[in-house]
Length: 170
Image 1 (cartoon, helix red, strand yellow):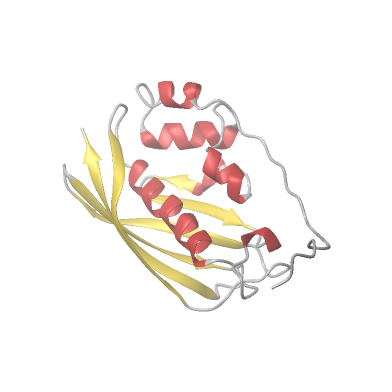
Image 2 (cartoon, one colour; image 1 turned 90 degrees about the vertical axis):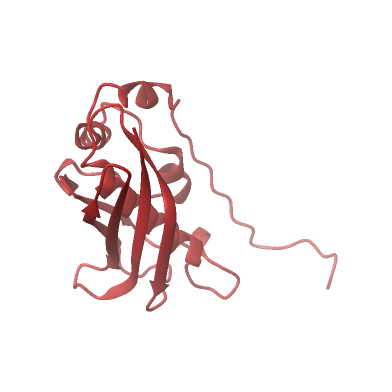
């Protein structure tokens, strides 16, 4: 180990918006209306999306029971061995699967992830293809909902698969 300063340091800065307007809208908009409002720019995107550099949401990516999130792999997503960290996969999948569930909920009803299980199939590296996490609701009751999803590129190549169970907060 050396005390010599690191060279070729990189920096990244980003901003995010106040979450208060989005939180207030949750009381009056259904989950589907809420996510589409974010995609249209009527409400601010989530801070975690800004932190990870997720691509802007698209209104057409949210239908009842389905949600899509996109990401271009970047070097700042890397783990120590030079590929996208598993936590980035998990966050992207958690976003898509939980938001797929959110699209089925009425105004004022929330949710939280109880369990997330994912498998990485192949690595992602900076400069590789943009990927999308596609979440789809499998089943739901008044108290819980289950969704599954995949991270794929534009050719359909699979990078990861996941399932989740969310608690519905009425």
